[in-house]
Image (cartoon, rainbow, N blue to C red):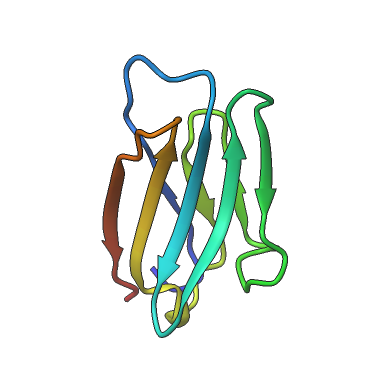
Length: 96
């Protein structure tokens, strides 16, 4: 919903303790939103994007975006990078 919020969750059992979780958005342009380093549990929201003030990555790898805009519609992809293993999942967000 326009102006609302959304939280994308990641279900992974068992949860790895090392590696990186990366969230990307592919709307009118493709961009990296955030990364979470699992061994330090440190998250980085990429400040060069319009998501920088409106998004948060949680220790369970989920991504929350607040104050949704029309431009937030599109595909969201999460990738877990653990050594040579890189599973990816995607979801499409529609704004109404």
